[in-house]
Image (cartoon, rainbow, N blue to C red; front, side):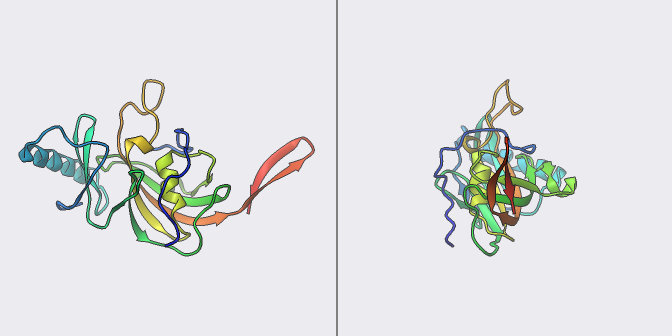
Amino acid sequence: SGCVLNRKENLSRRFLLFVLVSSGLSPTLPSSGKTKSKNPYDEKRLLEQNKRRQKENNAPEDFPNFIREGFEVKVVTSEDYRKSESGLIYRDYEVGKGDCPKAGQQVTFHYIGYNESGRRIDSTYLQGAPARIRVGTNAVVPGFEEGIRAMRPGGKRRIIIPPELGPPVGPSTFFSSKQFEVFDIELLSIQNCQRRTIAFYSDVVCN
């Protein structure tokens, strides 16, 4: 497609500008770890628990399932999902047209963020306005930037961000445990940006 999903930059792990945040048994994509239990019955029970929670939270169709035991997780998705070299899992619903965003450009997009239980964490649709970030400025966590940099305007994609591509965790952060984050993204447009300087004032304008 000309847009390669591959994290080439050593992006700093920072907070998101905004609040970060399958149905049937199907191919399992390797994640950051596997469940400790070797008993198929235990995995089945954990999978059913996750499905029940997602149903209670009205998770969207074809939402990935997470077999979690402590910090070790197995991700279960349909065969339509792909996995990049970095570990980002994604599925394109619409590819879009045009070029992918480049470093320094601004992207305008809508998103809905979910946790592993399918609970909606945040949504620009509910906020009534799309989000905007400049690519390559570490404005979002590495997994989110990798996912949106391989999109084209008009494209719609679901990304599953593993903990190693997500936000930092710990007492000093908003996130207390390593969780997978799921985002549905709709890329609306890409704008070129340039820096302007007037006297002692300098800013970046994107058109």
